[in-house]
Length: 373
Image (cartoon, rainbow, N blue to C red; front, top):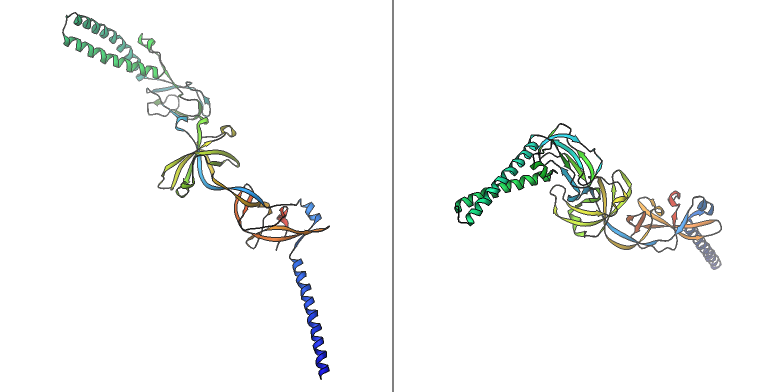
């Protein structure tokens, strides 16, 4: 009986030892099965490459919308100083003009009457001035009364003021007052551009009557265009002059342009809840910017150094993000580990990694067609 018990114990011990070896062997097999294998042929044909997780400067970005607008000194609304009929139009929309260039030619009764009034006033002023000087001279010799002197002086000064005002008006519309004074009247006058720039719009046609409130045309100096930003109220405290601004235009979202924030508004719009800010466009020659063009804008408020990797290196599975690290290699294959990461910000094709990942080499190119399920 004791002999049988002894044999039974020995058999049980042998079986347990055998079981233990098989379990260990299974665990090793399972560990090996966790690797994702890619052959060297696959590596070469898919143009894969390994790299490292980089330390990159990431900017904190505020996104907003805006538009290209002109500075107040860079846009001119052209109106005539004297009412009249549009006789000639010398320009077309989109044309470049220089300061002082003739844009329109007008004529009309008011213009003719202005010249007549000036010529008559100039003639009267000569007579009144002569009379005033005569009376003034007599008064100094105690001939004539003070009352006569005051009356003559008053009439002279009043007429001289009228003369000066009419003369300035003629000079303002570009006429030579000295020729008008001799009754050499002009049939028409020209309206000239006060700034150099491009004609953005023409609002009148030949034969149309125009007064001082009529906007004949608009001229914009494209060298004075700037970027207007509509920034949400909650982001205003993060802004300061000098910050980098990157923007895209709606007609070409693949091209980016640089600007520098220079003005931060102080009023919140009741409807949009945004504050108007302005930025200087750094290189006006980099594009053919136009007034009122819509822009998508990023304001870079601060920068910090973070761990990041190329967006191409990240694979997704079941709602999570992974990278593939090199565990080992042999003559035929590479063996990769799947490492879960927490994604942060995206900038210039690089993704911020929020969790701590310490691996020497990562597959950074060609990972897109590897099955990680």
